[in-house]
Amino acid sequence: MVKKIAVVTLGCPKNQVDSEIMAGILRNNYLLVDDPADANVIVVNTCTFISDAKEESIDTILEMAEFKKNGNCRTLIAAGCLAQRYGDELLGEIPELDAILGTGDIESIEEIVSQTEGERYNYVTQGKTEFIYSDELTRVRSTPRHYAYIKIAEGCDNCCTYCVIPHVRGHFRSRSEDSILKEVNSMANEGVKEVLLIAQDTTRYGLDLYGELRLPSLIRQIASIEGIEWIRLMYCYPESFTDDLIRTISEEPKVCRYLDLPMQHADNKVLREMNRRGTVEEVESLIVKLRTAIPDITLRTTMITGFPGESEEEFSKMLEFIKRVKFDRLGAFAYSQEEGTPAAQRADQITEEVREHRRDILMSTQQEISFERQQRWIDRVINVIVDEKIPDGKWLARSHADAPEIDGHVYITSSKEIDIGDIVRVKIIQADSYDLMGEVVSESA
Image (cartoon, rainbow, N blue to C red; front, side, top):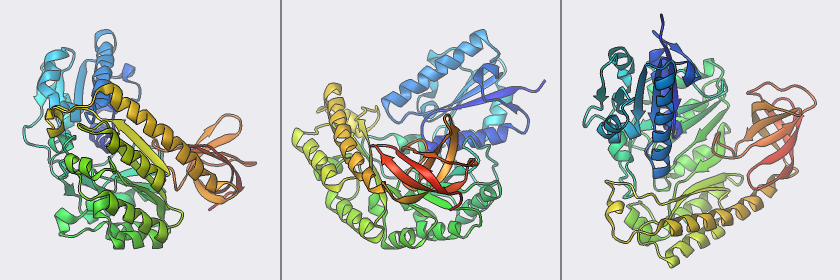
């Protein structure tokens, strides 16, 4: 009897790609199922970025453990970043767990499933975090048919003082252009129209492999692939942004006028203590260049509140910066004290109450800014890609300004049926802080 396997994914799109790779390996000899309640084997791909992510990962493992106690599940495996970081502890504290799979060993998932029969294993190969997938590993995509994440690099060398990613993911390492282009060609043949290029530090792509920043070259080659309509860039660190990259985004119509520029703070002293490269002034100069070269560009960033030692004055500088720059999108995290990081060892920790209060102030301020920025779309006709049909004769779509699962939606109405994945022309008639509302004016774009 063929075993049924469910892969449960937590965390970021980079983790999602890893789950799709594991599913692609497993489908050769096992039956993949969506509902863990139906599975004989459950793989939980975990996250450990901040404390909330760790708690969610542990809660999910415990939830899946109930299927082992009272359901069909016979084997429970924890994979991903939390498993890499706390493998022995997880096995020691959760008796229902049968195996731990580290980030450097995901190619071994089929072997691990076959061997985990009444035995408990920790498959975290110490010091091995250097796995990077190739186009030869077929993925089972969990995204809709019309868009896909393309991981162009793995790991990180930035070593921010608050972050554990280099420890659990290893050094920064780029995939070859050839491997990426083969995968994108394959995705286009499957009907993918939008590719989202992801990495821990996307703008650094190619530096380790080719000795130069190759993201502009990669974008231009992807843009030449028939069937790909939108190219979206995620996790673009400001300090590696080149004039060539700005020109490429400006000149290549397939590139979404959208950039995710993680800043984390807007005070130079705090940035130095975070071990972030670059200064506030350099980022602001980059933003001016981007908005000059690409007037309709949508800019997103992330900020951390309550980093150790952050004074009221330093927090105020961050608040004044976002009021001045006016990002279209902003996500804020209250600082998470991650063991094993330099920041966690500092004696000047900010209380959780203050961290969260500052985050709430930041997000409340940004909500007003986002509302103001969104109004510029009213009465304009824009292209949107259709993600889902919803009740009352409406569809959920996204514009160039909206990354899936992160940003808002464009709620659209149409006098005719629309297919999921279509790119259509829509006139915007209303906007709030997060979403747009519009009506289809042309069924093709």
